[in-house]
Amino acid sequence: MSIVRRRFVAGAVAAALALAAAPGFAADPAKQNLTLGATAGYNYDVLKRAIVPQLEKEGYKVKLVEFNDYVQPNMALAQGALDANLFQHIAYLNRFKTDQKLDLIDLVQSTTAPMGVYSNKRKTLAEAADGDRVTVPNDPSNLARALQLLQLNGVLKVKADVDPLRVSEKDIVENPKNLKLQPVEAAQLPRTIDDAAFAVVPGNFATSAGLKFTSALVLETPPVNFQQVVAVKTADKDKPWAKDLAAAFKSPFFKGVLEKDFPGYTHPQGLK
Image (cartoon, rainbow, N blue to C red; front, side):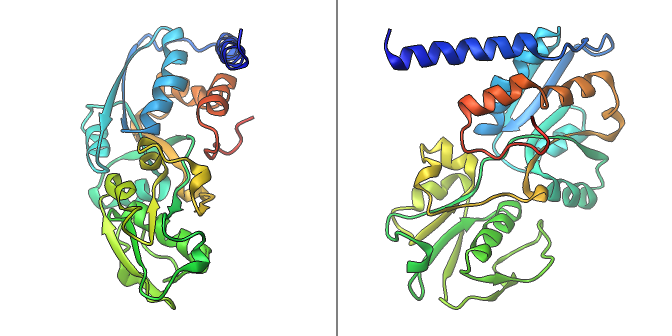
């Protein structure tokens, strides 16, 4: 048996043992069918690989729904088409539910794929030339993270306490290299790496495009308010099925899947 094959088998056995050792839930007798929504990419994969097996083991029937935008998952949740969603950080959730008058709440923290700065023209951000073009996400949620990442690396400076749902390039107060920020749909950002001097790419779209985190010039360490959370309707947060869902994100099986399938991702706080 080859080394690669042995490692694969060992990993599969470890995951199976972790699932077997996961704390037992009791499927909610009042609700055994769950519909969970997530954006395409790692959020969907986290549910499929790390959460659904645990819930199914306890008797739940789980349907996954994939989304490709940052509006419909919350609207579908509020309207009852979903029981929970996974796609957003808490800063975005809090602002969105306030603006849309939705009674939603964060249930539990998930893993977060770090946003990174990628380039095929520069080896470091310090090599940025005057007037360089930088492609950034065009949605405010990811743009806020992109601007923070650039700020932390000394490239520019944005206003303090910027609104994460309304941020724009106009919130930049210092830009010594006169960088030209070009907003692009987040899913298309990997395609701009060859043309722009720098591309700031959200982690889920980086992995979907085959980019490796190790190839990024810099990676973010997301603060708590920019880490992914599972959202539910406030009225559901204390129901048995919601507690089972939250417990699945804190289990040894969840941690094992993250370590095996999602290396380099930020783990939830308190995950042991």
